[in-house]
Length: 333
Image (cartoon, one colour):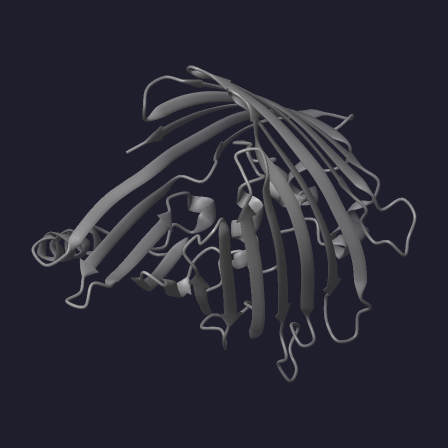
């Protein structure tokens, strides 16, 4: 580890002389109590601590060449260099291209609605697609013109096992006013390997949402997604939908938020639905640090064996019908 740190430090110092380089990160730990109706457990988790290295070079033609290496620091996330993001980008007045591991088009669309801090966040059931940060992605995001931003991405052959072999996605985001911001997104991932456990696996998601600010300090978000998953060529298609909303109020150092999501689960079966309700509060300790507390109620209509077929990743974390109370401390550097 020490030789690696030394190498990185040397590389970064050398880079400062040639391009703009910045280092930032987040340390985020959460203490949570979860009760599933049978027993309670207390957990202390690393809730996504990261370190980011970013750089950019202003080219002679006025465009910008950039890069980012972002790594998870937690042991459970493997903590490998570039495990979160690893891409190079090229930006002009006409938009920005990124090549490599970065947020997918669908993840970008969901993030604006996922306003909660805790491990049991809304993004788990709002369905942001199978490849959240694909390694093999080429992505384009346009500048905002007359309120409209267009984005698109394509997935090529994967550089690591388990990622989709191919995929494509597109999204439109239109800001009509501070009150109304509309967006739609579509994504398709598939694995066409001849043989292996991933052969025939695919997922399609179409989503739409509206968000904005309707009064000083008040913000809202409403989102709907309809999606299909197929575990392999031999498995049937599973179709489901999810809808949710959030409301938040910020005044000074205080922020309050509430959210609710309903996920239908497999629409061909009864009793597969899930519901998630959240209450949250954040207090800013400084410009860089804050503390939060969140209360989560999770109602699971599906049993553990069938839950994964609905494409919902929250079940392994929470178990059957459960309530979680969490307190987290976050500092940015």
